[in-house]
Length: 492
Image 1 (cartoon, rainbow, N blue to C red):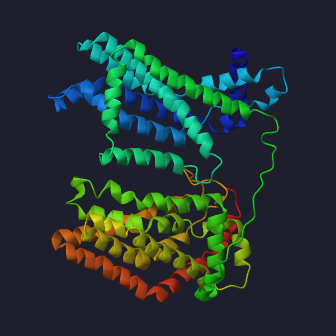
Image 2: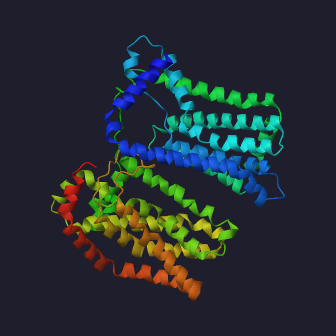
């Protein structure tokens, strides 16, 4: 039966129109795979001598095991975003006398040979043979290699459980990011020494081959959970159920105080709440709010105030950046309708500005607890907020006049590059690199206070001359109006 499944999938693969149209892309992916294979192979061969040279007073094998905690976290995170359960077209098989158990076992068994499970072996096996060559205990070394293979498969099936549980949610990435983030910070702040715990448990398990039954049991349990979940979804009518959405309304009358921009502001707020991709972007704000915890507690950044400016711009401008870089593509589905109405273009753009400026102020307020790391940090966040409101809002609005790609609001945001073009990559230069560069030069050649003053003055300049800047930006949008209408009418 397995051979029949393999033969059917091979025929589906070579006969698909996708393969015929994407030969160049597939060749490129092969080269990417070969590149990573060579990288992991080189790591497996060179890791022991490098550790021996750089850390002569420590055992290289112990050093490797101490980093397994970070290896496992990175492996789980990468798999969540890139690895998908290898399903096949099973609906035609469900009408035939083929047992569901066999189909599910095949699908899960196929995942065992995933590239993500295959790749770590190019590091684990060469490193294991290097340890044997250098006189390490044969039993412990072989047990370590077996353990690493089992751990890779455990992460493989754990990823499928996490992904299936979060797939139905619009906030699909939050559970895994929260899990990885909490574990990392617990270890980073030494609340719980997870790296030392993993190190101790691995050393204990590889000391006796009998103890490898523990990871084997965990693997069997995760396989069973995946089997049950997948079998419960294996019905012909599973995808025929109509999705029921509960309609909800919100009272947005408070936005009326913003005058002529109020209808457009209400439209944006409803879009952010009711659609999957913009709603996912909103919740990225929660992740960005904790971004400073990566830098501020780290001693190596204490003498790098320019990096603090980057963090300040990013933390106070996380929503501004995520939302602003796709203006007006968020409205691409009904942009033609908007442009056919007798409405002032400036009021439409003003609503975007108000939303972005308000988010920068709100993010500054939420980031006030960073004062724990010093008043200088809070001052940088305040200056970054002023710069975001005065400069970066206008930069994003101007860059939006060059957007030409349509956005599907119903798709999730994680690793979704639909609607992304050259504009989204180039706009990062004035958004982040420009303020960092200006502060760095002023701070280096004068002092810290002058760098802060320069960014503050630039932000105030943008706020004071907001009306003139908006007039210039509006003219640019009007000039490109019909080009954007035509572009958003195309499927990309």
